[in-house]
Length: 139
Image 1 (cartoon, rainbow, N blue to C red):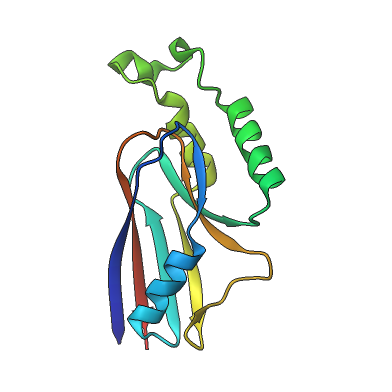
Image 2: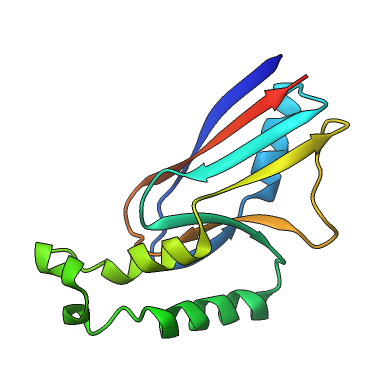
């Protein structure tokens, strides 16, 4: 059994951002040498997400608009969490909707993604350094 654990770091200049990390994860799969196995990609911060979908700009804007409608950033006083001095109550809810991690099969040494599937890092409370873990296991 082979395994590889790597961390990818992000610091977005804006509060919200959506970054396609597929190529970075594919490079780690190649580095691992795993031919058949699984690849876990997980956000390690409670206001960020990892998800899989299409890399189409309109869809990304739709996600952003939809999430902002479900959990608008303002008014900040709308969130009890923000009574602690934070201003990111909305970011916690957006993360919960979009999820924490994805698991992708590795087949013949490559990520076994669907036709339009791409892996994204989603940031909902940016402007500080955060990381994700990539854990690859298999033969």
